[in-house]
Length: 265
Ligand code: GLN
Image (cartoon, rainbow, N blue to C red):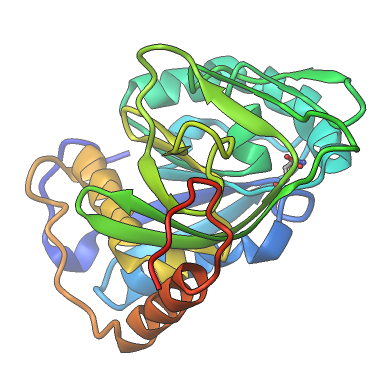
Protein backbone atom coordinates (compact mmCIF):
# COMPACT_ATOMS: atom_id res chain seq x y z
CA UNK A 1 0.00 0.00 0.00
CA UNK A 2 1.18 3.49 -0.68
CA UNK A 3 0.20 4.77 2.73
CA UNK A 4 1.90 8.01 3.60
CA UNK A 5 2.60 8.97 0.00
CA UNK A 6 1.13 12.21 -1.15
CA UNK A 7 -0.74 11.90 -4.36
CA UNK A 8 -2.42 13.98 -6.99
CA UNK A 9 -6.15 13.54 -7.25
CA UNK A 10 -5.73 11.58 -10.46
CA UNK A 11 -3.93 8.58 -9.06
CA UNK A 12 -5.69 8.11 -5.79
CA UNK A 13 -7.41 4.82 -5.24
CA UNK A 14 -9.36 3.13 -2.49
CA UNK A 15 -9.96 -0.54 -1.88
CA UNK A 16 -13.35 -1.22 -0.39
CA UNK A 17 -14.18 -4.59 1.19
CA UNK A 18 -17.76 -5.69 1.77
CA UNK A 19 -18.03 -8.45 4.34
CA UNK A 20 -20.58 -11.16 3.56
CA UNK A 21 -22.31 -9.18 0.80
CA UNK A 22 -24.92 -11.86 0.15
CA UNK A 23 -25.72 -12.87 3.72
CA UNK A 24 -25.67 -9.41 5.30
CA UNK A 25 -27.51 -7.22 2.84
CA UNK A 26 -30.78 -6.24 4.50
CA UNK A 27 -32.64 -3.27 3.03
CA UNK A 28 -30.06 -2.74 0.35
CA UNK A 29 -26.99 -2.32 2.54
CA UNK A 30 -24.81 -3.28 -0.40
CA UNK A 31 -25.84 0.07 -1.85
CA UNK A 32 -23.32 1.58 0.53
CA UNK A 33 -20.51 0.12 -1.55
CA UNK A 34 -22.10 1.41 -4.74
CA UNK A 35 -22.40 4.88 -3.25
CA UNK A 36 -18.73 4.77 -2.27
CA UNK A 37 -17.64 3.65 -5.71
CA UNK A 38 -19.76 6.26 -7.46
CA UNK A 39 -18.63 9.15 -5.28
CA UNK A 40 -15.02 8.13 -5.74
CA UNK A 41 -15.35 7.71 -9.51
CA UNK A 42 -16.93 11.15 -9.83
CA UNK A 43 -13.71 12.57 -8.38
CA UNK A 44 -11.29 10.49 -10.38
CA UNK A 45 -10.53 8.22 -7.42
CA UNK A 46 -10.40 4.60 -8.50
CA UNK A 47 -12.38 2.48 -6.06
CA UNK A 48 -12.43 -1.29 -6.21
CA UNK A 49 -15.10 -3.16 -4.31
CA UNK A 50 -14.30 -6.69 -3.14
CA UNK A 51 -16.80 -9.01 -1.50
CA UNK A 52 -15.46 -11.16 1.34
CA UNK A 53 -17.42 -14.34 1.97
CA UNK A 54 -17.07 -17.06 4.56
CA UNK A 55 -13.67 -18.73 4.17
CA UNK A 56 -12.28 -16.20 1.70
CA UNK A 57 -8.66 -15.14 1.93
CA UNK A 58 -8.64 -11.52 2.99
CA UNK A 59 -6.53 -9.34 5.17
CA UNK A 60 -8.11 -6.07 6.32
CA UNK A 61 -4.77 -4.39 5.68
CA UNK A 62 -5.48 -4.78 1.95
CA UNK A 63 -8.45 -2.50 2.40
CA UNK A 64 -9.05 1.17 2.96
CA UNK A 65 -12.69 0.85 3.89
CA UNK A 66 -14.55 -2.11 5.34
CA UNK A 67 -18.34 -2.31 5.06
CA UNK A 68 -20.62 -4.78 6.77
CA UNK A 69 -24.41 -4.74 6.55
CA UNK A 70 -27.32 -6.10 8.51
CA UNK A 71 -29.03 -9.44 8.55
CA UNK A 72 -31.49 -11.54 10.38
CA UNK A 73 -30.32 -13.48 13.42
CA UNK A 74 -30.00 -16.63 11.30
CA UNK A 75 -27.62 -14.93 8.88
CA UNK A 76 -25.65 -13.36 11.71
CA UNK A 77 -25.18 -16.82 13.14
CA UNK A 78 -23.98 -18.14 9.81
CA UNK A 79 -21.21 -15.56 9.51
CA UNK A 80 -20.30 -15.33 13.18
CA UNK A 81 -17.57 -18.00 13.41
CA UNK A 82 -15.87 -16.69 10.29
CA UNK A 83 -16.01 -13.13 11.61
CA UNK A 84 -14.58 -14.18 14.96
CA UNK A 85 -11.63 -15.76 13.14
CA UNK A 86 -10.97 -12.41 11.54
CA UNK A 87 -11.42 -10.50 14.81
CA UNK A 88 -7.77 -9.87 15.67
CA UNK A 89 -6.97 -8.66 12.18
CA UNK A 90 -9.97 -6.34 12.11
CA UNK A 91 -9.14 -4.96 15.56
CA UNK A 92 -5.57 -4.28 14.40
CA UNK A 93 -6.93 -2.55 11.32
CA UNK A 94 -9.22 -0.31 13.42
CA UNK A 95 -6.38 0.47 15.85
CA UNK A 96 -4.39 1.51 12.80
CA UNK A 97 -7.16 4.00 11.92
CA UNK A 98 -8.79 1.75 9.34
CA UNK A 99 -12.22 2.96 8.26
CA UNK A 100 -15.29 0.81 8.95
CA UNK A 101 -19.02 1.20 8.48
CA UNK A 102 -21.00 -1.51 10.31
CA UNK A 103 -24.79 -1.50 9.93
CA UNK A 104 -27.35 -3.09 12.23
CA UNK A 105 -26.65 -6.84 12.40
CA UNK A 106 -23.05 -6.08 11.46
CA UNK A 107 -22.93 -3.35 14.09
CA UNK A 108 -24.17 -5.85 16.68
CA UNK A 109 -21.45 -8.35 15.75
CA UNK A 110 -18.83 -5.59 15.93
CA UNK A 111 -19.77 -5.16 19.61
CA UNK A 112 -18.91 -7.63 22.36
CA UNK A 113 -21.95 -9.78 22.02
CA UNK A 114 -25.42 -10.13 20.57
CA UNK A 115 -28.11 -12.24 22.22
CA UNK A 116 -30.58 -13.22 19.54
CA UNK A 117 -34.35 -13.48 19.72
CA UNK A 118 -34.18 -17.11 20.92
CA UNK A 119 -31.73 -16.28 23.71
CA UNK A 120 -28.73 -17.74 21.96
CA UNK A 121 -25.62 -15.65 22.53
CA UNK A 122 -23.25 -14.77 19.71
CA UNK A 123 -19.90 -13.32 20.63
CA UNK A 124 -18.82 -10.35 18.56
CA UNK A 125 -15.38 -8.99 17.76
CA UNK A 126 -15.50 -6.18 20.31
CA UNK A 127 -14.64 -3.22 18.13
CA UNK A 128 -17.35 -1.27 19.90
CA UNK A 129 -17.63 -1.37 23.68
CA UNK A 130 -21.27 -2.34 23.49
CA UNK A 131 -23.58 -5.29 23.97
CA UNK A 132 -26.81 -6.02 22.16
CA UNK A 133 -29.70 -8.19 23.21
CA UNK A 134 -33.04 -9.08 21.67
CA UNK A 135 -35.75 -9.05 24.35
CA UNK A 136 -37.51 -11.99 22.74
CA UNK A 137 -40.28 -12.68 20.26
CA UNK A 138 -43.02 -11.10 22.39
CA UNK A 139 -41.49 -7.63 22.37
CA UNK A 140 -41.98 -5.28 19.42
CA UNK A 141 -39.15 -4.69 17.04
CA UNK A 142 -37.70 -1.22 16.53
CA UNK A 143 -39.05 -0.42 13.09
CA UNK A 144 -39.37 2.82 11.21
CA UNK A 145 -37.65 5.88 9.89
CA UNK A 146 -34.86 7.42 11.91
CA UNK A 147 -33.50 10.92 12.10
CA UNK A 148 -30.34 11.34 14.10
CA UNK A 149 -28.26 14.42 14.81
CA UNK A 150 -24.62 14.00 13.86
CA UNK A 151 -22.08 16.78 14.16
CA UNK A 152 -24.66 19.48 13.52
CA UNK A 153 -26.25 17.68 10.59
CA UNK A 154 -28.96 15.10 10.18
CA UNK A 155 -28.57 11.46 9.32
CA UNK A 156 -31.60 9.66 7.95
CA UNK A 157 -32.31 5.99 7.51
CA UNK A 158 -34.62 3.10 8.08
CA UNK A 159 -34.30 0.76 11.04
CA UNK A 160 -35.73 -2.68 11.67
CA UNK A 161 -34.12 -4.52 14.55
CA UNK A 162 -35.26 -6.57 17.48
CA UNK A 163 -31.91 -6.31 19.24
CA UNK A 164 -31.23 -3.36 21.49
CA UNK A 165 -27.68 -2.05 21.80
CA UNK A 166 -26.32 -0.59 25.01
CA UNK A 167 -23.04 1.29 25.01
CA UNK A 168 -20.76 0.79 27.97
CA UNK A 169 -19.52 3.81 29.90
CA UNK A 170 -17.04 5.75 27.85
CA UNK A 171 -18.16 4.36 24.51
CA UNK A 172 -19.01 7.27 22.25
CA UNK A 173 -22.29 7.14 20.35
CA UNK A 174 -22.32 8.07 16.70
CA UNK A 175 -25.31 10.39 16.91
CA UNK A 176 -28.32 11.47 18.95
CA UNK A 177 -31.76 10.22 18.02
CA UNK A 178 -34.22 12.93 17.00
CA UNK A 179 -36.90 10.54 15.79
CA UNK A 180 -37.03 6.77 15.86
CA UNK A 181 -35.46 4.23 18.17
CA UNK A 182 -31.74 4.19 17.46
CA UNK A 183 -29.70 1.89 19.67
CA UNK A 184 -32.45 0.86 22.06
CA UNK A 185 -35.37 3.31 22.04
CA UNK A 186 -34.51 4.42 25.55
CA UNK A 187 -31.30 6.40 25.89
CA UNK A 188 -31.60 8.57 22.77
CA UNK A 189 -28.33 7.33 21.30
CA UNK A 190 -27.68 6.07 17.79
CA UNK A 191 -24.74 3.96 16.76
CA UNK A 192 -21.21 4.06 18.06
CA UNK A 193 -17.85 5.38 16.99
CA UNK A 194 -14.36 4.15 17.80
CA UNK A 195 -11.51 5.84 15.94
CA UNK A 196 -12.55 5.56 12.28
CA UNK A 197 -15.04 2.75 12.88
CA UNK A 198 -18.66 3.80 12.60
CA UNK A 199 -21.52 1.60 13.78
CA UNK A 200 -25.16 2.43 13.09
CA UNK A 201 -28.63 0.95 12.94
CA UNK A 202 -29.42 2.95 9.81
CA UNK A 203 -30.24 1.03 6.68
CA UNK A 204 -31.54 2.70 3.59
CA UNK A 205 -28.95 2.09 2.26
CA UNK A 206 -27.58 4.80 4.52
CA UNK A 207 -24.78 6.25 2.40
CA UNK A 208 -26.72 7.18 -0.75
CA UNK A 209 -29.12 9.25 1.39
CA UNK A 210 -26.42 10.74 3.57
CA UNK A 211 -23.70 11.96 1.23
CA UNK A 212 -21.98 13.90 4.02
CA UNK A 213 -21.43 10.64 5.91
CA UNK A 214 -20.24 8.91 2.75
CA UNK A 215 -17.75 11.69 2.10
CA UNK A 216 -16.50 11.58 5.65
CA UNK A 217 -15.65 7.91 5.25
CA UNK A 218 -13.95 8.55 1.92
CA UNK A 219 -11.96 11.45 3.37
CA UNK A 220 -10.80 9.43 6.37
CA UNK A 221 -9.76 6.56 4.13
CA UNK A 222 -7.84 8.85 1.78
CA UNK A 223 -6.03 10.58 4.63
CA UNK A 224 -5.06 7.28 6.14
CA UNK A 225 -3.70 6.02 2.86
CA UNK A 226 -2.15 9.16 1.42
CA UNK A 227 -1.58 11.47 4.36
CA UNK A 228 -2.95 14.77 5.68
CA UNK A 229 -4.75 16.89 3.12
CA UNK A 230 -5.52 13.95 0.84
CA UNK A 231 -9.06 13.85 2.15
CA UNK A 232 -10.08 17.19 0.68
CA UNK A 233 -12.91 16.34 -1.65
CA UNK A 234 -14.45 18.43 -4.37
CA UNK A 235 -18.19 18.95 -4.01
CA UNK A 236 -20.46 16.85 -6.20
CA UNK A 237 -23.85 17.60 -7.63
CA UNK A 238 -25.84 15.93 -4.88
CA UNK A 239 -29.28 17.10 -5.92
CA UNK A 240 -30.82 13.61 -6.05
CA UNK A 241 -29.14 12.47 -2.83
CA UNK A 242 -30.23 15.57 -0.97
CA UNK A 243 -33.79 15.24 -2.25
CA UNK A 244 -33.81 11.66 -0.94
CA UNK A 245 -32.46 12.93 2.37
CA UNK A 246 -35.12 15.63 2.59
CA UNK A 247 -37.84 13.16 1.70
CA UNK A 248 -36.67 10.79 4.43
CA UNK A 249 -36.59 13.66 6.92
CA UNK A 250 -40.10 14.61 5.99
CA UNK A 251 -41.37 11.03 6.24
CA UNK A 252 -39.76 10.48 9.62
CA UNK A 253 -40.64 13.77 11.23
CA UNK A 254 -44.25 13.88 10.16
CA UNK A 255 -44.75 10.44 11.68
CA UNK A 256 -45.44 10.11 15.38
CA UNK A 257 -43.21 7.17 15.97
CA UNK A 258 -40.58 8.77 18.20
CA UNK A 259 -40.31 6.89 21.49
CA UNK A 260 -38.83 10.05 22.95
CA UNK A 261 -42.17 11.78 22.61
CA UNK A 262 -40.77 14.46 20.36
CA UNK A 263 -42.88 15.83 17.58
CA UNK A 264 -41.52 17.84 14.71
CA UNK A 265 -44.61 18.38 12.63
N1 GLN B 1 -31.10 -9.62 13.57
C1 GLN B 1 -30.83 -8.37 14.17
C2 GLN B 1 -31.99 -7.83 14.99
O1 GLN B 1 -33.13 -8.17 14.77
C3 GLN B 1 -30.37 -7.36 13.13
C4 GLN B 1 -31.44 -6.94 12.15
C5 GLN B 1 -30.92 -6.05 11.05
O2 GLN B 1 -29.78 -6.12 10.65
N2 GLN B 1 -31.80 -5.23 10.50
O3 GLN B 1 -31.74 -7.05 15.86
